[in-house]
Image (cartoon, rainbow, N blue to C red; front, top):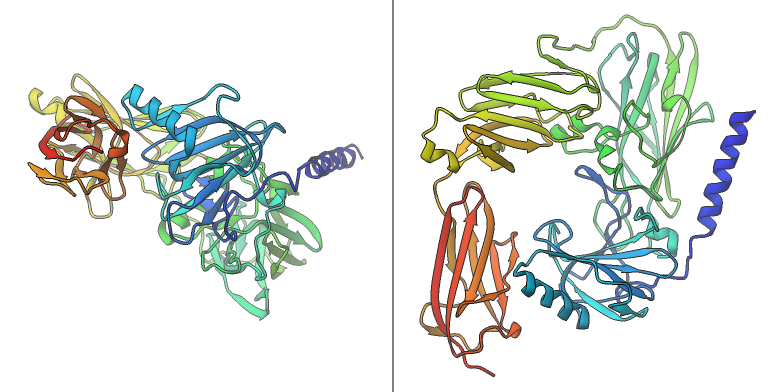
Length: 563
């Protein structure tokens, strides 16, 4: 009775919170029809998507408007991530976020660029004082773009609560057309108990689906026993777009009793990486399809799991029949369902699960240090989601850290003994993660004497790599000694084939100029409207460093008529 009262209290609090969400407070940040390329809670690499990705007609430069009255509380400019992003604080406690912008507008743009020049840095994070940059609902605040880690022109838009937790903007009255039920891609069963099986198999088992009617799928009878769970791969497609978006809600019932429910209304950034525990991470790494497990395993605190009974795990008993039903819904309530008939039978196991006990055994809740060859690996407590056998091997300058199918929640440290290298070469070494082509990708690290360290959140193959080649610098829209009065910008390509670009600095006639770095096309751009070059004769100097300190310098003279 106490448990029921507690659940009723939680439900009441949640419903009260839902009723307090203002549905007519925030206006659209764009002056066009809202069509999404990504929705809230969508499953992404290492995180849940925290907002709406709004299409901008495959263009950059569309006006972005303040969704409500407020003031600029934060501005961030980064090469990666959100790129150029603006944060507005509103009187009702909410924050709206506008990301991947091409540029800011008006006084906001002037303020940010002024601070960039003062710091002499393109990347900058600012927290203006309250009401220093006030805005009214509908004010022009920026222009849409493709900056940061954006895969194409769009606006990333968020609404956050007073604790900076992202919330589903759809709950605030944003109406996106969606008349199609979610698409079911696949269904998997997971025998979890020691003697559990599904169709006499103790390993992850793909279940064949038969489409009965629109939105209704059914499986053949499953022969199962013991503790088992299910996982589903699904997606949604909104009207007017071909993008594959995430689903809003999944509910699983056993004989009409709810076993599990996940719903994407709100989450915190501190929990978002637990997505790697929620999905079948290993299956994603090998098949690029994310299976949402409809059961909660240990070390999974996700709040998007809003209801569960016995952690969503089914205890199938011998000689009993069950009906397991999964309902997958989009925000509009369009539903696809899977009906799974289960026959409980303790049958002989034909395909037992196997574990290679010759590997290194690592306790998830213990810190572990392992030495192999010239490498030392430090795994902090709770870096792994569960106790795991890890295949760790070293040969020469190469290290195998198990494989990419096991997720890491925290960073682990790899340290290499580089005493066998000449002292003059050691500054050019770095630890790199090998890609599918066997090429090393720089992993951020440090060197102390004859010890080289790097921090990573990925298992896989690593190596000690050597980089003595400086970056390349190539002018794009000008030549040395030429007039470029017709150009609005100065553009230069920079690249580095091994350790990657670390930093750059450019001057004209000895004065710092702000060059915006777009890593997706390796381009630095200076806007002549900044007015740094106040002479018709201009001497450009650009210095570029890679991640191990190799330096390249480019100098050129150009002429430009002054306005």
